[in-house]
Amino acid sequence: MSDELCRLSLTDLSRRLQAGEVSPMEVTEAFLSRIERLDGSLRAYLTVDARGAREQARAAQARLARGEGGPLTGIPLALKDILATRGLRTTCASQMLAAFVPPYDATVVARLREAGAVFLGKVNLDEFAMGSSTETSAFGPTHNPWQRDCTPGGSSGGSAAAVAADLCTASLGSDTGGSIRQPASHCGVVGLKPTYGRVSRFGLIAYASSLDQIGPLTKEVRDAALLLSAIAGHDPKDSTSLRAPVPDYPAALGREIAGLTVGVPREYLGEGVDPEVQEAVRRALATLEGLGARLAEVSLPHTEYAVAAYYLIATAEASSNLARYDGVKYGLRVAGKNLLETYLRTRTQGFGPEVRRRIMLGTYALSAGYYEAYYRKASQVRALIRRDFDAAFATCDVLAGPVAPTPAFRLGEKLADPLTMYLSDIFTIPVNLAGLPAISVPCGFSRAGLPIGLQILGPPLGDEVVLQTAYAFEQATDFHRHKPPL
Ligand code: GLN
Image (cartoon, rainbow, N blue to C red; front, top):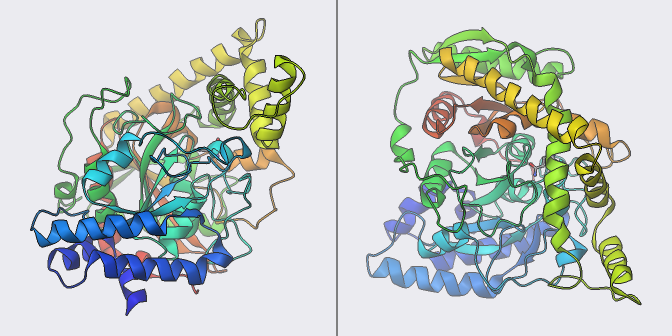
């Protein structure tokens, strides 16, 4: 019975809570005991906040009893450990912040708190969200619930694994180059990266500020729409957050997709894409066609330059953002004889090898004499990639293709070769460079039993049509109903 509560979608759980059929306390206890039983072998959580969760559940219960609750009141969530939580350790999966307790909440956390959500704890990620496998976490990798010897993807691997294994009802992640969509795809859950600026980044510990965006990972598309409605909107604390009014996202879901044009980028289904992924995606496209959508081949000719441009822009921004970890203001401090030695020791011991590699790469790309050749060039490529998308969206309502070129890979498989790891982001990165919304929705399984995701991309502020298309696809299929063998 209690495991059954953990399996419910946010939408279903919310209905039961509102109807008084279950109580927030009961639900929270069910999750805490399931985490206790199963997370030892998955390691999705870095911090379980049983005390805080029980307190929030009690408050939610009182609120529901007064008839004052909303759709998120009493819903148990997990937060990627890159989102600041007042009074609760926020590590970024780094030794640098291993003991950091923020004095404030990220705006998304504050909004969910106000809505009455229950925070079960903080979940694992690649250190400072730099990675695609959760293996760069200073606290060890998370395991894929479908196959323990595979990665859950990353960097929001803990968020995706926790949703897939029913260790929370839904979670939040962040996506700079694919970190919500790729782990969602590898774990068989829904992951939405909203339009850049749609959701406030205040309190999201910065990796690459012109690319970072927070979004939901959920069991079903409707859950993602509900969560997006709660976290979207302008925030005076984030100057890049958009002032555009927030639409009623769940309301977009019922709309038919008959008559919509779905663009299929030629570059997304070619060489280098695993045949099983191609097959699943092609079948998914046929399903969309069966629902009345019109398929149209389009071209995004600058796709092949996206990874190179991203790894210059993202590392350049990271080198600047991570300069603040100097052993003086907060975080780890390893004292040396003088200031320079303190910087050196703190940053050498506080950051893992992948983070150090990126700081060096980014510093190099920005340095005098190289700036024009690297950073400037990458920014120009970024403009071309945006133009590719503008042209495609002039004739298409959405685009669709794979999320990642392969299903989940084995732990350790790509660690020795950062370049192959970087290349696995080829279909997710262009979306961030252009600031677009995109979702990963389950669309099949490999013969080995690993989930495969379909990516649906929209124009800027087209989050609604992305959700609408994903929902129509989900309603026509049952991949989202499969559960990992635990
Ligand atoms: N895998 C990409 C990177 O390592 C994307 C990470 C992310 O989206 N945070 O930068």
